[in-house]
Image 1 (spheres, rainbow, N blue to C red):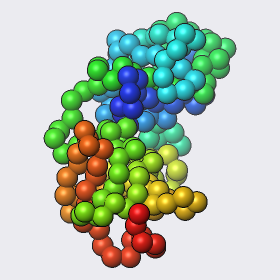
Image 2 (image 1 turned 120 degrees about the vertical axis):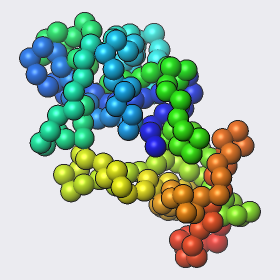
Image 3 (image 1 turned 180 degrees about the vertical axis):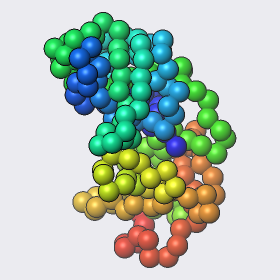
Image 4 (image 1 turned 30 degrees about the vertical axis):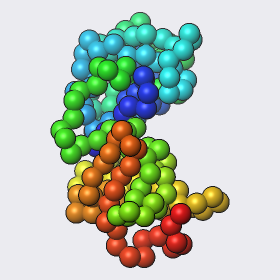
Length: 196
């Protein structure tokens, strides 16, 4: 699973802070597809999740995945960013890609953005709306546990806390992206209240 399309632009990383003396930036990847950060890829830097007139169009010159306390993150060297002060000005921005340039996924794999705002069904019963996807992290708080299932954050009703539903193949019946439906067969007791 990987973070992606919401609309025309997809956030693939969030720039955190400077990392090096030549303008490199440490970033939180929002995808599990490392090839997205390939050298030469055109990206847009923006404050939000879509490009606007104030966005910066840059190219990824190189990237690497650090070890140690920053394991699970990515370091990006971007065109036009060659000093610490230039990198400091970019911290906090989102790295966006055009949705039509994203790699094609296997038939049983989905971008996070595809699942957000879908209705979750337990068979024929609507359980709520998917408002996000969470990933289990190692104790260091940075490294994603790849063997753990992603969790669909589902809003079951107004003024309720989200219910985290493991997005596992054993429970999944099908995903209808055009109809914005995720159909599963869920174990009893996962939702405290009667579904909508």
